Length: 162
Image 1 (cartoon, rainbow, N blue to C red):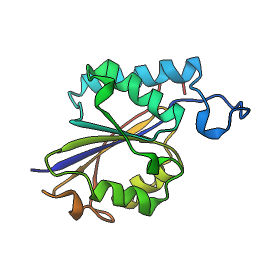
Image 2 (cartoon, rainbow, N blue to C red):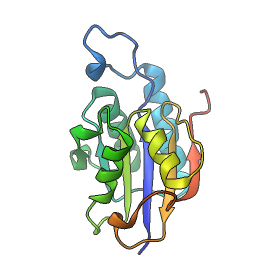
Image 3 (tube, rainbow, N blue to C red):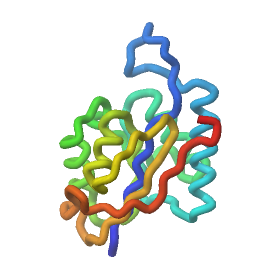
Image 4 (spheres, rainbow, N blue to C red):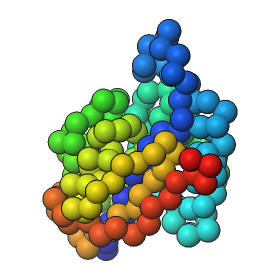
């Protein structure tokens, strides 16, 4: 069965670095934009089997907004600390290590890594805005088979008030 990957950049976050970058919170706009994009996915009947999120505050809270909108219990969000500040190679390794019982997976994280991953997998140029997502499809049965230019671009969504 083919694999589908949803790459989601976290919502707009506060620029207040007093508590450090890792702890930055979503702004009210970031929350509403994330909810808007999550609702758009419902119109495409494209809800993932598995949600994987960075443990950084802004990414995890974005994942929780998407999960709530999609009717998924937030306790089912898998936290992967290696997504925070991940390089392209780390993100590709994460994708390649997804269990094959999952065919449709969403990853919530950060730029520049997520945009670089989308570019690497499709050969197309992507710069994910906050709360934006891209859906890629792969004609493979095993996540280990996913590599450079193996993804087919399916859908790109971003908030309307970006």
